[in-house]
Image (cartoon, rainbow, N blue to C red; front, side, top):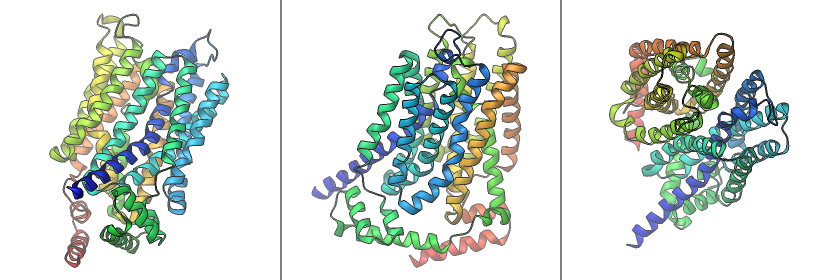
Length: 472
């Protein structure tokens, strides 16, 4: 009975620590979703800010510029100084951002505010997943990693609610409190035991691991051996960034990742988070289905679907989900384009909620979760850190392009053209995925190599993995 209580105590500590760490992700989601619910206030000619459409597009897009600056810096910091303190570096960035929001109504200062938000988000999305994975036992690691998506969408949902139902200043004050709360609570958590083992500080690693498992330091000897063995094997197989470029199969894996990123972002994902209230401008502005209510509804859908997909992705597999997802995005965006073009002919103002809502359903059914899963499954551990940093930078750059194109095309030609482009990207991606997307479910990287390359390289790696298993 005592052993069971001790084990449960350890699990509770890990879940509690993961929740505190996830506050940084909630704060990031809140920062990312800030623009959409305040679009009307920003563009109001009688308001305090009075931003032009062009300026609003830069306010929306500048967050991606900030995101470009910090992922690679975050990778360096977490290997040099640990996971904990670089995660806390995001706090002053968020705090200054919200103080600027409260203190000024200048459009130029809002550009700086959004770049600071982006820099904070870049640090969080680079470091937080690694910290959360390293503090969790294997039996709850999947649950904790799944919570990353839930808390990100939860942050966006909270922001949509704050911006919709509260004033500009009250919303900013609440946003300021969240990173301060995170700073206070997270400061008391231990550093990752993996970082201490990397730095050969075994006593500190034992103390950290013992805290997370709620046991004495002399009771984690076996776990420390496993961590040490893993780190030694990882260091032995370490490859330089040049391997991603020179190795044909790694290039294929990177090409698959880039297509999945394009299919996810250029079908409308990031533009929905920034322009949701504008996308629903043709709904019943006075009735229940007003733009703000519709925005909150789709943010809720993202949260629910990110939980549901956790139970489907390992049962159904990655390939069927991502193909159905891309095809569903094609149909949804095509329907949105038709409505946007013929909107004056339709008397049913709820149609945008159905078409855009169905897109949100389909994109979270496969494209978004598989994009996240592929980061860990398409690349071996020897290059995974560099590949992940590269993927974050590519995703951020594509998001920046998508946000700016939405405004340029929408203002010069028409919003319906954006939806047509999204439909073309989704349709083309569906065909490409049918022919080239691999199934990674229950496969080692060696087995995946064998499938992608069709040579004995995969067989050699598979043999090496089998020998390592025998030695253990």
